[in-house]
Length: 474
Image 1: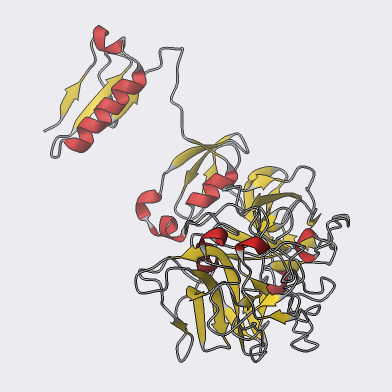
Image 2: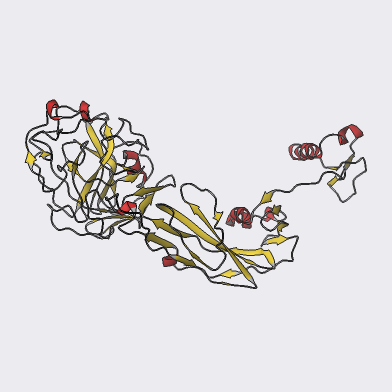
């Protein structure tokens, strides 16, 4: 049975939108009842109308406002597959027109339907650029040098259509959720400009000049300035391109070693946890088999310049720390927590703007948080699902395509000797780690052994050992 409702004068005095919402809710929440309604007048609705809105000559019906980018974001494969999506109507603020989805494309109420421009797909080599040079801050320890960006790529697309216009968009992977227009970038090419280290994404929207609703988007292009890796929670961590003490002029993605006792190649220095750079970290530093006493330490819990242990690698049988006890140095590089973003401590050896990575930062570029620490990820025979692609190069690991960790060897806290180089390495974190079943005062590390295993912040060592450091941006 059909029922007919009209609104009395009291009802018409209410805001129209509230009445519309109330009526729609009534229809949705009351199964089996079919009604027609007029809002804004006591006129009986036409037989073919389920809802009639009569203007009071002061207000109208406001459709959802979306930009072309936002409209394209909701036009997913799942959206296209739903027959119920047909008829969805929006107001496109980019072109200033109502648009509706006809099941195949968005049709503008301002212009006739069109054939969108065709953009040629990009090759894989055109979708990703990793930019580095020795004068960028991620590639040098000499802070007196100016920051000079590496040569920037020119992005280019090829499209066919009628009277085409172009607009490039970009976003910083960590700070912008939406793509923003690049002002003045209105041709089929765009010369990328250096801003700061990180991952940036670009794309171009191509439209017909006479009918802007006829548009298409290019493939997304990624540009990495410096070095880094994605995390399990979809962030980008910026790492220095070299280990502390390595030769910053070398290609940071290629192995080069001049011997275990040479650090100024790709391997870098080997630090004892909690110590600043005083010469002890150099691979040629002499070994002293006597622990630093309280009298040997200055006010910052570092070996005094006047001490006979200054600049020397402290090692000896059954040594666990390079100084008496652990309490004086527990906060030298961290704050005693195992948070993701541990603040930089005053004795952190990384240069300004950089710090020793935390345990969880190391772990985040492998996969999500472990349910139990101590897990070893085996890459043989079947690699698990990891955040980044891991590639063993024979002398180190590539993490994605913008970070390389060389098998830099380590130095024993028992005798000061080097481990066998070229097959694996262990990198320091900023955290001391107390965990049931482990020694009370050990310090977390990130390690790997060739292609067999990754230790994502799950190995723990005494601070007397000498390990490399790869700094991360604060």
